[in-house]
Image 1 (cartoon, rainbow, N blue to C red):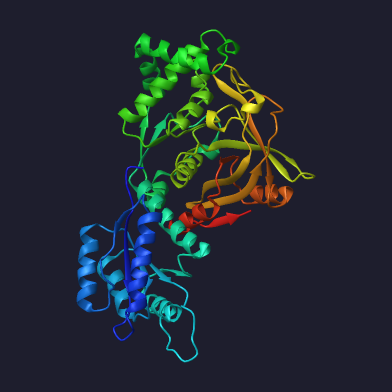
Image 2 (spheres, rainbow, N blue to C red):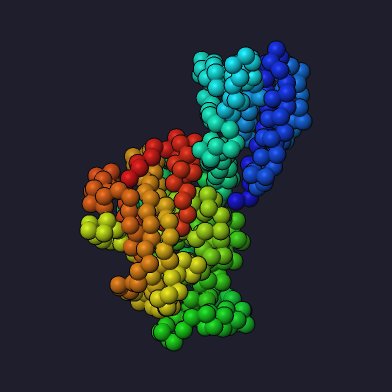
Length: 449
């Protein structure tokens, strides 16, 4: 979250080709980048590159800006020399982008020949041992534009995660083997650092909070929800935990966290489901039940869909006639996900009590469903699409029925066959292609369902 992707964009041609079209493309694609990549740091040489001196100056400029990835747009046919110089001297990923040919005229020459050049350059880089990405189609082609954007989003997530620290609040719940993790594999795959804070520290923080701060949050919560449904004392525990975690994650320098939410927290009447939901709407991701892999998935979704609050959840039922899956969890859904049509409630934990949870149906809309899983030292990503339906809850807790694209029984059987754990992460956004591309950049195989 703290880092921004630095992008270089160059427009190229070989010297013997006419310059009018490349100059036009330079104007158009630099303008496109300023408009469409406004959240990234852009470095764009002011001229079309063709001579070794121009290429060398552009490389120096991009090095000075610490460019993370370079987009090379074909103004016209370009030999292998420019692409090779970029990857060899800069050591950063290269996206080769070939716009469509301009309209043909029977008696006129070929003006660009970009597809041919891109094919040639990609093959040359492969021989040299340098992978690259290729995009065919102009900026006006939604498929080409989205491919470029997804590549950049993937590299942005990769850069951001490699600078993050994941905080562990406790280890894992009793007998939850699927919540175990391999810190070395996580560091190797995502670049994440990991540190730990004992739950006792959180409890001590709760006790040390100023009374006026606790009372202010209790008043704010009481305005928003009917707190009479909570057992005696649970509103205070809820607010103390919310304030304590919000301060502790910042004080310990964590970018996101995972918490062992039972049994100790239940014994202290602080089962944290509703607290975790509120924190998500503050942009603070703390995954539940010590599930590190689900927490990493949630953080990845938040990076790819800024401002969204994902939902860590169980898949508990199928309806083959409607081709729906029912996703449910104890009550950790962020308030921004609640379907106000069905009157969300702030209640006790729906199974064991001893805390706070949201009992609510969730809002309808397009969802992407994902789960990262370390399987014998190699991460894989399971990925699904669906449409969340406008349905009321049928049991306690937070829940949503999702109409799936693939047949639900086959999907469930495949999940079990692939030994994917029971937590999935839903986000109310279509980031399917973007998260798939992100996984590819991290060498993570994707299971598409």
